[in-house]
Amino acid sequence: MTMEMAGETVGDSAYRRIRTDLIFGKLEPGQKLKLEKMSGAYGTSVSTLRETLNRLCSEGLVIAEGQRGFEVAPISAGEFGQIAELRELLEAHAIEQSFKAGDLDWEASVVSAHHKLAVMERSMLAGNASDTETWKQCDWQFHRALISACGSKVLLDAHAAVYDKYLRYQMLAVVFRGEIAAVEHRQLMDAALRRDADAACKVLHSHIHDCVAHALRNSDWLRPAVAAANAKKEVVRKLRAR
Image (cartoon, rainbow, N blue to C red; front, side, top):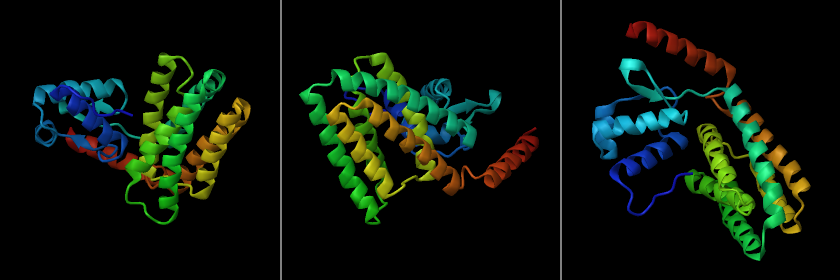
């Protein structure tokens, strides 16, 4: 997840803010990204904005429409499943390496990150769904802490990129599975403290794939009927644009 950096350029700031809005669903799938309007909203020139959107195209978050501009990349149930599988593959491998190499400071970081996440989960369970971004930031920080001792920046960067795409689906679906998710996070922390990578990977498998199944059952964005209707609207829109 892209965090604000001191001394960043206007272009970097626009990239970070737009990318965050894409991941957290403020810019919705299929939405047209009008350069003039976005230039004012994000405080950057049209030329810088075009460069930023091209950069986001390379990440698969935005698509270019030739001479017609840019729009937010669509989503699909099939892609979500593929992203979930890739996240599990990378995270499980990183867990194995991190659990072997982690020291006392690593353990402390895992416990601290879990504490923050658990506080947010208790708030969500109490019915407070007003701060989903903070909740997912804490979720990210916990999963990142688990794998932070893996010893490979390449692996961490690859995982972060895939996690962001996975998170985009979660935010559009507003996925919170309640007590079961909180229990799985506690189990992951306990497995880390025991250095039991096998147990952690089993929990991770359920944690990710049950989340996908929950989203497919409950998200308007991912239900087959809605997806078909959206596809039909897209065909009509393109025909009218000719």
